[in-house]
Length: 244
Image 1 (cartoon, rainbow, N blue to C red):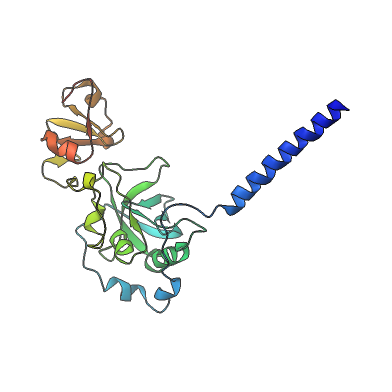
Image 2 (cartoon, rainbow, N blue to C red):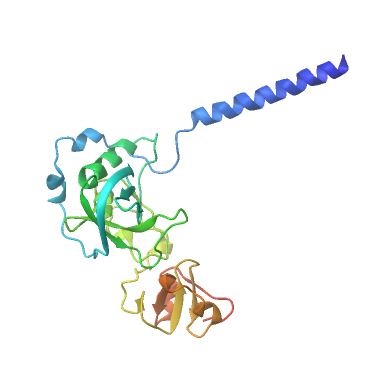
């Protein structure tokens, strides 16, 4: 009898845990940024109507492709299979308020159209293997449009070639720790050539040019600096071996 009671008690515990887990999953509605802009706001606007509101971007097209799929407001696929993550911005996830509006906006501008990509030279890809870059349509910066329209929030993750707070509305709060950062178009840094210091865009560290760890940095991950303060201002930390 005691054994039977123990079994019943164990089954009850398992049942309670299972029900709780199901409740948690069903209650999950996503995390992060949301907005209440209705997707209908753009239903009567053409891509040309939207693009006409914005100036030409200073970003440079480094590769092009046809957008074959819009995953959400900040991720698209190109016809070569490349998955592109809009750098510096974050839009609502699936199932979260604002998801449809942000996705619809990007679909209107990009889907089945030729787009340009300015790849982030400080960090080419994220941890999921997605290309990080600015998406450009007819010479206009779509990342910037998402921020200006309120369809995305700034997601600045240095090191990065781009400083998305420059794209955002003037009312956007900039954390104190990011106010002094400059992007890597600064003339004292370069993604090619040479410099006194070698930054590793993958590790976020920078080294003396003679440091063995700097020399081991893959060429596509290298960012060169002539000024130590520039490297630090862009989010790089000194190597603990060479202590630049």
